Image (cartoon, rainbow, N blue to C red; front, side):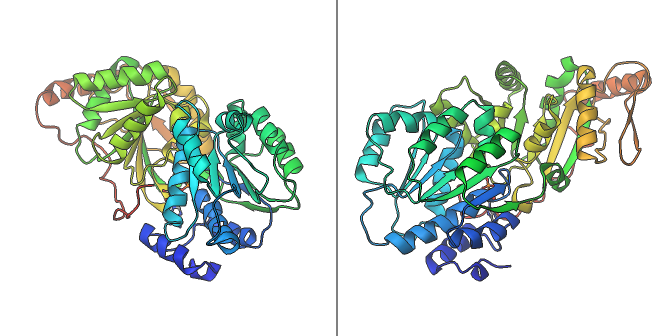
Length: 436
Ligand code: AMP
């Protein structure tokens, strides 16, 4: 299917061409026709599937039909999303797809002064993208009038619940006009989210895209069994490979993320961290330094990274194995976006072995072990990990191979790195003319 067949108007088709989008993703193919008909929609999809365009494109087309050439005085569409990063990305998407239309949008979120946001609201906007706390705050102060609203999008509803925003979301919904089109997206549908969907949607169409565990198949994965104390050396060693153009490194904790950055600096590798303790400005700066190629390595916690959209990310490195196996799928889904291939490496120490087994069970994939690195786990004895589906046995290195590898390490130190047993360089598509 092509975008042409979705009956999109010429200015939007032109913008999509500029973005380099040649065909709609499955979620777009399924959602756009229903949304153009004005129907409510319940979408089960996570970031990385193209869900933002799945709602942004039809919204732009509908608003353009109803309001082209009119005033921007009242807000016609509200998009509620849980994090600042997502709000900014959604704003960038509206800017990109709506570049040839006369519609205005603005983005509001907490953690920054409100002045610039209220000024934009006073100038008038058609589309408002907001996080719940700041939205309620500015509503209470009288800056936001939703009486002309005709489309409401609730994005990442399950994450709103995780982050404790569900009460705020309900407060916002209570203030919306009853006659409206409602679009509801969630990666998962726990009972509380299903209940919320039932109360705010009217006869919705249902669309869903492949469950998360299968997206992992696009990504070339490997695991390095390594002692905790050697992870920092292993990371510097791996990143020494210049084929790694961009790497997003995951840690479990904020403190861990900062520590990895410091350790990398000692190895002369420039990196920055993003996590909840960093100011909004510091996070945005780190993100744009990374997106624009000023730093190769970004270190993040799961909360900070989920939903962050980095075009052409070549590598994801799990410095620490996540406790929740689905998180692994979310992490490696940062690379391999919209059908592109990517590479994911995981560093697993002794204490994380059970978490790794759970990941193997969830993904039901053969994930090759890279035991050619200089710091294989020093534990004696052979540990076997039985993969659930294919019954493949992965051997963890024993004391003898660890000894041999330590000798290797000595030979390696100081010299040019060769034969690191690393994955092939990422095969990436040509960059698009997009910064979203
Ligand atoms: P999302 O799931 O909305 O976070 O989108 C994930 C990524 O896919 C973003 O970088 C989009 O720019 C990109 N994308 C969305 N739709 C398409 C498409 N039809 N073709 C190629 N890339 C797309």
